Image (tube, rainbow, N blue to C red; front, top):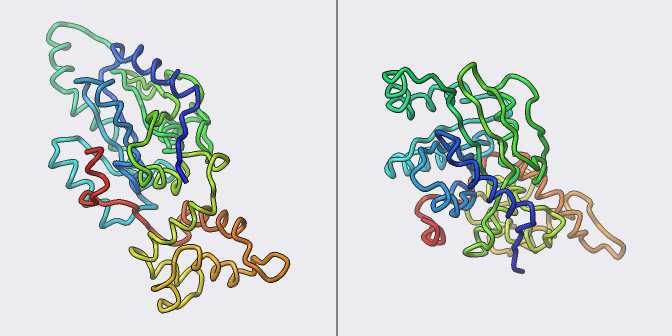
Length: 291
């Protein structure tokens, strides 16, 4: 199975970002804390050039806290400003505006010396379904941006007032035109950044269970009432069969309903029902291609 997804509106979004870049002082890039590098659009490196940037590790409530700390340390070593937050609950959100001011303090001071008074303008970018609109609504304290639990809700640019002197440009989610490897694509699929309609959900679920068996076996066992010995030597499709039978997801003839089981598994993992899970660490070899 090869996953690729780059609908026409994403090419339009790339142009939108490029056309509005000169009008902003800083770019805030939201990253899913569960897949910080897989969820990073490497096109931004060239597109944003030397524009000041702030990385926001969103959905931290769903990520393994020890892994999140490793990512925070990794970005700090790269000299990248980074905050950890949860835009749904609001945790960490109050730190965002002060951090923006801190990054831009020299620019603000220079403008003040010259008697220039202008609003700070920030562009929010990120992959689909990463939580940009939820964050903006938290920052603006109103329903200023459309919110949804699926990719592709924001379809055009929106300038939104955050404070009396700070405006934020919300942009639609955008992926790279072609994934550098399929592990990255799978991580995006696990977290819901790619529309389920274009995926073979069963294949994604098999791969996900292979990963969970190796890194988070206890979570599988606890959620689906399985024994560790039952899953250690089994492949993903065999584990999904066990889950289906435990949950009574059976089709005629007593066979496992893999389609239904895959949908349930993906929904429960994305919703945090298996606990806090991170799909990649800074030292994972497959990430060397995008570092």
